[in-house]
Length: 171
Image (cartoon, rainbow, N blue to C red; front, side, top):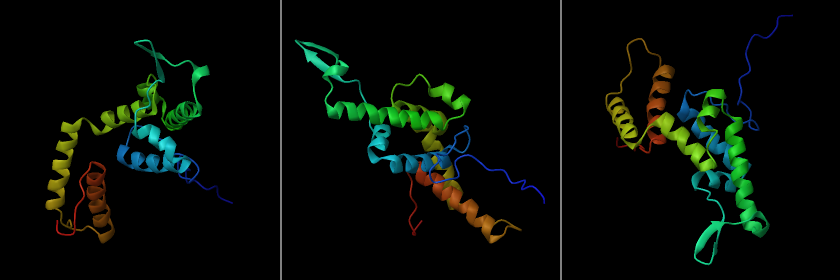
């Protein structure tokens, strides 16, 4: 009996988060967003909104709130941030982990990965301009089958959507 030589890749199950190795960020980002939401919508909320250290005002001075003064909401927010951070740390290879390991919030991790792999708003605008140009000039290549053409077209549309541009049927 022959051994199955097909490799099993990380992140291909519904209960396993997608591994990120530094390539194909848009693919990973879409899958990771969905994975975090399925864990708990409040965990995804920690990625979308910046968790800040809990503070209290003593006199006219703002100080970090001691743990023994936390209420249930404070504890839950801290716990959800830690869960989101753990989920993000666990899906990164060593290079990507080293890039974000000093971050103290899930929001900071997500945004550092985003800026690193998508670029600043100027870089995103440049990428979007290039994708719009590819979309407008799109046509089937010589000797290209329909499946390959559709895959190429879908990549343009999906990459544009991830960068914030949606095409309508009129486009």
